Length: 512
Ligand code: BG6
Image (tube, rainbow, N blue to C red; front, side, top):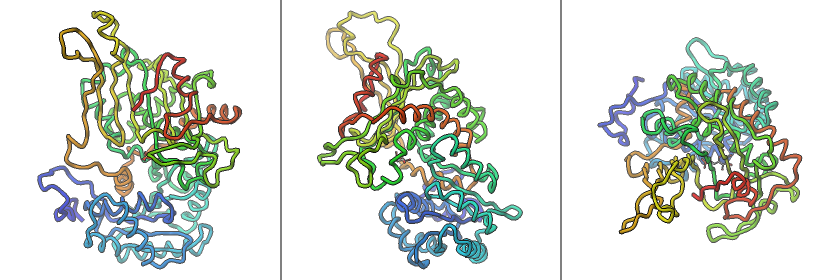
């Protein structure tokens, strides 16, 4: 198929749009873990949305593999229901019919050789009838303990092997291990079977438009970069607040906690993009090089008791509803020490950032859902006003609003209208919804398409993963030795210990 064919007839595309669409060539995707939440809520809808936007090849194939007694039609029904409920773009019968023609289901256990032989047979058949050309991605949306089994099966059954120009890729969902040792072990397991360029580690935050916009904001403008350093920035706050609890994920979450769940990956990636130097290009190698340099320069404070905080949500009220505490959640032991809130102070030992603290916090059952990166600037060195004129003046801030209210806010002081000189903080806002007519694709649409195109810049390399664990491991060890996390009320902003942690530095958390 020529690039753009299959797109010309797509009514969702604006005919004036002259950008070259990135359309995947002939290929298929095998999904392990089709019965999980991620598949239903994110992956299946993303596949449909890509097809609907004309970005998948006409013969695209989706193969589900699971321990279920399903026929192809049962699998198609599961995908159909997921698409109807969660897809971003409107449902169109003709798109669905063409896509669903390429659905296959292979029932089996992960340790069943015969099931993998059947999978190999199915894929060979798809190459013949759908023209997938021997190009297949294997998406492991399964518990990490099963990775080695599936990867070994892919090798044994010949599925990881490719001929000539064909490609075989493996997509790995987090968690990439639970500490440095296990992450290294996982990387070894993968590298025995797949070369590094065929391994795609998903950190879905990197697929978010607003996260990619950190690089656009910094490196496409002259306005920000001159002040993006220790001479002007007082400190940086990176917040990932969620209003939801752990839902039905007790099995995954207990023993993992907020820091392993989202700081090790999403928040440290946000830190890396915020703190890194300009890459020589946006090629994967250059980007990863700069991120790796920053992560290697991250230093954790000596006194972890004063510079970290963790908590567990207690029962409370949220959104007008009574919600239970973490220790009362189903399948969570009453003695669980798992934190649902974590705050950490880090420093970046580079010329640009020496002495500038980066405060990271993430928590569940907080006041509202918001993810943001805030650069808080130093106070003006001198204020030529009467002291009373600036009583309400705070610090300038540049806030990159990752979600849900996507945009950028600049906060600065302005004269209050009237006869006296009085200066107060005001906000200047850029909102995606107001400036662009296109709505942002879901992170998984972007990342799945990148996998099928073999485009790696938005996927962390194993060095980044290992460096992130090096940062987190001593903190986790410290916490493991220091009793129970503090309780905080659901619907609030975390434990008092987190407030005190910043107060010791003479600072306060932002109230988004
Ligand atoms: C996942 C975490 O990586 O990110 C979840 O495992 C969390 O615990 C989720 O809820 C949040 O993603 P998003 O895109 O809604 O911010």
